[in-house]
Image (cartoon, rainbow, N blue to C red; front, side):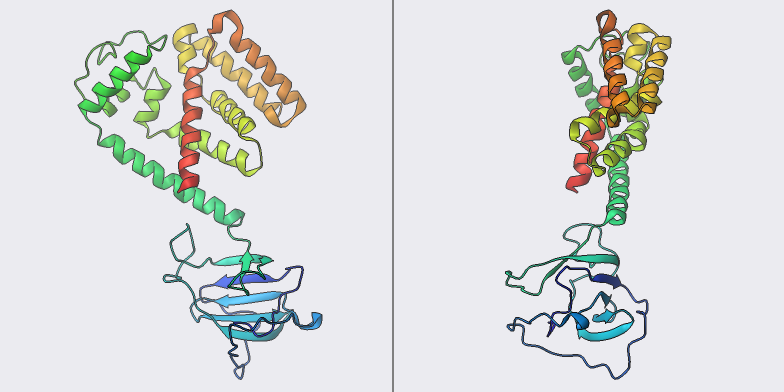
Length: 315
């Protein structure tokens, strides 16, 4: 443990965790490692002696304190059971690698010298999110490839029970009959006319390429869940004409609704006053004429994006 606490009271020290790169500047060879009784609560060092930079070399199990370019002290440290490589998730027993700020010191903990660093930072969150969504999508694609005829039978029964409007009839593997091929194959047959079926056939391409990134970014930028969901809905609708509208009111109507959604997005959507006014106008347009322009497929893809983000965050 550290003999005299070197960080400033305002917690402005910078902590650099590295695998093996050399710290600036190189430490003098005669530097001594100091051993201190862990039960001794140290006093803060004088202001002029406090560190503003901490270097941690994971490969050497070494921590060095600097003030400017001057080395103040160095200490041997212990790390987790598997510190090599960057930390990606809770429980992997790795130690983060990167540049972080000291944010807080817990003077009341049994580990009375513990510090909280600014991990995860924005880069860590983006990296973890990308890895998490990729893993989820690969797992989903594998599960879809392994679906069976019984899976198709169960899904068809659920669709008939829900009795959604505007399904029409298909010449092959119609939902009103019993399927004879695996679920993924039935979805591929309907992918050209149904957006949800297209998601199954493409391992949820719109969900992972449009919906999830939009929702994640909105939440990262502190939008409320309500606003983030509306923004995601508008982004998906503006990029992909709704197949539920196309079945009920025709492809021209579906394309027109997507154009209106694009106008709302360009006006700022939920983030600006004019954008919110445009959202209200679009809502009225969608409700006009007996809800014939109800973007139900877009709602389904938005729900899938919400689910993916919740799974990603939990993981």
